[in-house]
Length: 208
Image 1 (spheres, rainbow, N blue to C red):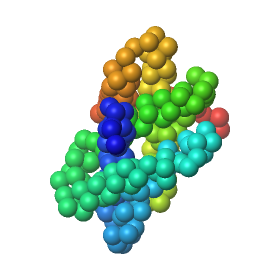
Image 2: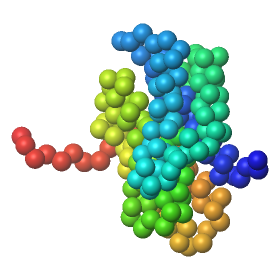
Image 3: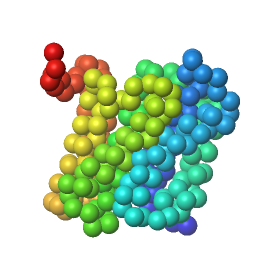
């Protein structure tokens, strides 16, 4: 089977999101986690957003059922966490590396898949964002944590900006591979700046 640039990037996103979920389970102090629960948390983090996107698009079978390479990528991510837990946990805590890379990649791939299915630009941008954040929402819910989208730092907004940028560059006929890199990098950059400088959107106060 011949892989394209998008295939490699997509599988890389699966690996890093799997590691994000598996590490979250492994590090959680309030729960005892065996190998299966660590694997399951990584698995659901990796496939959650893409599954919701595929169901919304009517894209059946969903991607991880249709493409066994996704399952292999999940296994690789899980295996790396089991073999190198301390090193990867340090990278995750200090650089929030895996969450950030994952949402950058998933945002762009989700947007592209939506566009390929003939979805309008507005819905494609939303589906790109959903692809990126929904797996993390499930992960945080399983860990009894407040999902990132409800915390102060900019998270879903970064994904939405990346989706819109990808669509604009696509309309302007920018090379597809370059578009992927540029748009994903913008998502990652916004997220890093938001966390480093504790930036967030203004709060809406309805009730005192």
